[in-house]
Image (tube, rainbow, N blue to C red; front, top):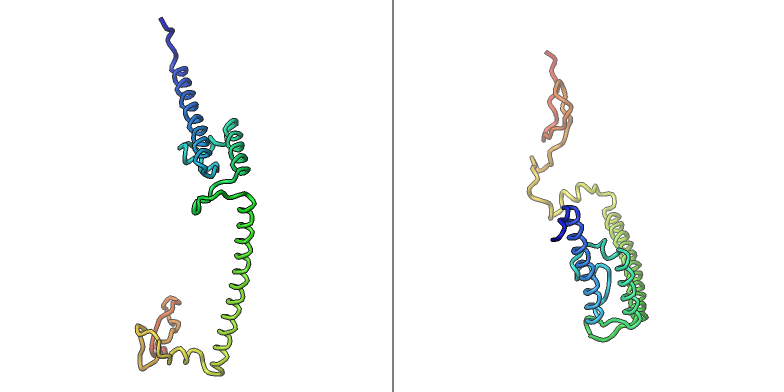
Length: 180
């Protein structure tokens, strides 16, 4: 007759089986990725094995993944588009060229911003001594939803008297206060 186990022993055995299963899935995922010539990264192994990210960094597994990555880097991996092998030197060259292109585009972007500033300054200078508000008000592209009275925009004035000091909109000057 088998001796009965305590619930803690049963739980410990179940956790050990679960842990061994997950570790086996990680190792199988790494082997499959090597066999299929897919790029090995820690994140890809996590997705492939369907385990948590901390597990791939656990002692024993991390070293195996690093070994597989080193082996893969030495032999190169296949380019997804062309199906040809790509060496590490080729990837470094592509990265260098991409960084050069980014640098060139950033400089070009800076020049375009500077040109836009100069152009905007020239437009403001062309207004001369004209009032910019009149220019905008008389512009044919003004918005039609603005409330107007007698062709003028309502003025914003400060309320007076016992009212709270809030802003109110009016199209006429405030009435004089009469003393009673």
